[in-house]
Image 1 (cartoon, rainbow, N blue to C red):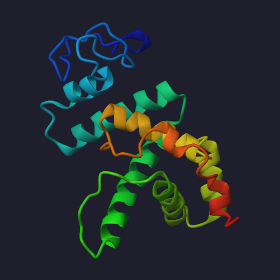
Image 2: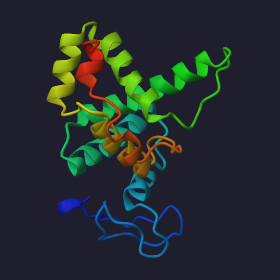
Image 3: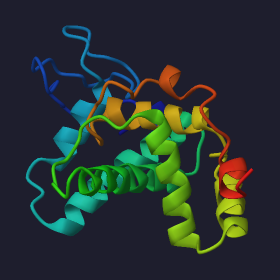
Image 4: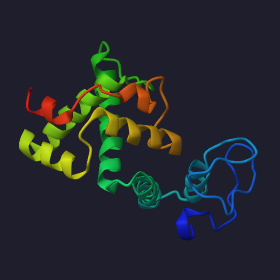
Amino acid sequence: MGGEWTIDADVACEKCGYNVRTLNVTARCPECGFPVLRSFIGHEARGRTSLPDARRVVRTAQLVIARLLGRNVDSVDFVMRVHRYAAQTIAKNRLGLRTRPQDIPASDLCRAVVDYALEHYRNATDAVATLQFWRLTTSDDLGQIVAALVEAGLILPGEHDTPADFVGVCRFEEMLRGE
């Protein structure tokens, strides 16, 4: 990628094959409307078969998303982990079946942020401090990151993944402190 997040290599649109070279990663393909960032991620991932290479591609995509959103890259990684955690938790709680749901309602994902943060940081004070440092304090913040991850193809889209679905659902500090 070149300056100002433009694609500086021949990258085919994942949907229609149009060359998205010189387009900004925030753009959509002028032929079919597919997200350029998603095509770039697919291009970068092709031919990479080792786990370290795959992780590097995902981390690069997370970095791009974080920069575009003006957020810390660790907050984007955290939301990806929480989404995976929520999917596993919901699947396990459905009669013991381990199916992977594609749709996680905003309220369930917010609850998963709190549960995962407490599990990871072991106390509410550290969890709140970290989420505040990342500027991940409300469900609105979570919705913004989820929408970007869906747009980039890093998490599967569901019916409840638009930023509007997350508006006003919760404040994480209140949930973590039991208020």
